[in-house]
Amino acid sequence: MLLRILYNLLWVLILPAALLRLVWRARRERGYLHHVGERLGRYGDLPRQGPWIWVHAVSVGETRAAQPLVASLLARHPAHRILLTHMTPTGRQTGKDLFGGEARVLQCYLPYDVPVLVRRFLRHFRPEAGMLMETEVWPNLVRAARQEGVPLYLVNARLSPRSYRRTARFGHAAAAMYADFAGVLAQTQGDAERFRALGVPGVRVTGNLKFDMQPSADQIARGERLRRAFGDRPVLAAASTREGEEAMLLDALSRWQRLCGDRWGDRRPPALLLIPRHPQRFDAVAAMVAQTGFTVQRRSAIDDGALGQPIDADVLLGDSMGEMAMYYAAADLAFIGGSLLPLGGQNLIEACAVGTPVLIGPHTFNFAQATEDAIAAGACRRVDSAEDTMQQAAGILADPDRLARMREAAGRFAGQHRGATARTVTALVPALAGTGQAE
Image (spheres, rainbow, N blue to C red):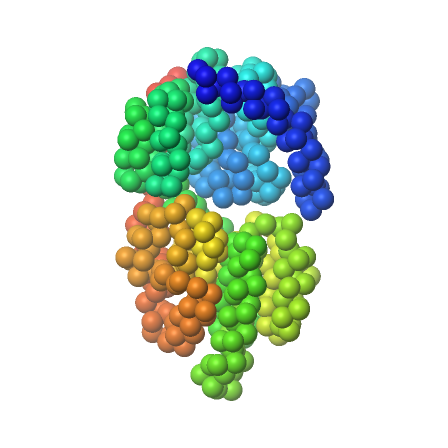
C-alpha cells in the first residue's frame, strides 16, 4: 500500500515533466506532438461502440509481434473490433502500416499510468478483455482493469534474469501487482519459472508470437529485387542498430575491407545495408557514414520501381519504416543490433523467417532463449565485438557452402517454433467466452 501511494505521488510530480518531454522528443520526431489528449485519457472523438478486444503494443517490436495475434482475434471474433494501443509514434505508425486497411482495428495512445487517466480510458472503451504485450506492466492500469471487470492478460510475456532481480526487490508488492492479471502467458519455460518465483499465479508457457510473424510476399519480392541491385557483391545487413554501434561497425568495416581486399579478387568488397533502430537518427547516421569516407545511398531516395537499378554505394541506409522483411530478404547475412552494447539485443527471428542467417553480439538478455536456440540450430553465430562481426562475416560470405547451410538452418529454426498464436488465443478463450467466436 505504501509503495502504491509513493508511486502515485511520484506520478503527480513527474506528469508535467512527462508532457514537457513530449515537446523535447518532438524536436526529432514530430509525432510526439500529435494526439496528446489521448495520453491524458481524452478520447472524445474516438468511437465508444465495440465490442472491443484490447491489445497494447508499446512500440515497433511489440506491434510487429502482435500482428499474428490481432489477425487471429479478428478471424475468431468477427463481431468484435480490436483496440490497438501504443506509447510511441513509431509503434503507432507500424500499426497503421500493418492494419491501416482493416476497418475493425482502431488505434490510439494509452494514457499515462495515473489512476484517473487509466479509468477514463477503460470507461470510454469498456473492453471485454485486454492483453499487454511482453513487458509492459503498469501497476495502476493493471489494478484499474481488475476493478473495472476487464480480464487483463500479459501475453508473449518475458522476464529476463536482470529484470527478475530488479522486480524481486519489491517482494510481495510485485506479486500483488501480477496477481491482478487474469493470466500470464510466457514466451519460454525460463520466463515462466522467473514469474512463478515472484509468486505469480496462473503462469502458462505459450511460446513466442514473433515466430508466427509472416513476411509478406510483396516484401520478399522487393527484397529480391533490391538484392539483384548489388550485383555480385555480398550484402551484410546491420539491422536495428543503436547509437554508438554504427560508428563501431563502420570503423571495423573500413579495416576489414583494407585487410581482405585480396579475398574478393576482381569483385568489389561486400556492401553494407545499414538499418538504424530509431528513425529520428536516420539523418545523423547518414552524415556519419559520409564522414567515414564511405559512399552512401538512402533507401528513401529510391522509388519502388527502381529497386532493381544498380547500387554502387558502399552503404545503403535503410531509412524507411515497415520494410524490415525486405531488407532481410536483400541480405546474405545479417548482424542484429542492440547487442554490441549492453542494451539487451533485438529480435533475430524476423531475419531467420526469410532464411537469412545472423550474427549477434554478447548482450542479448532481452532475447536470451531465442538467441541460444538459434545458435544451437546453426542459424546464428555469436560475436564479441564489431571487429569480430566483420571477421566472421568475411569467413561466412566467402564460403558459399557454409552460407547455404546457415540459410537452411535459419528457415528450419523459424519454422520449428511456430504455433504461439494458436496457443495464446486458446488460453484467452475463458476471457472471451460467449463473444462470438467463429468456431
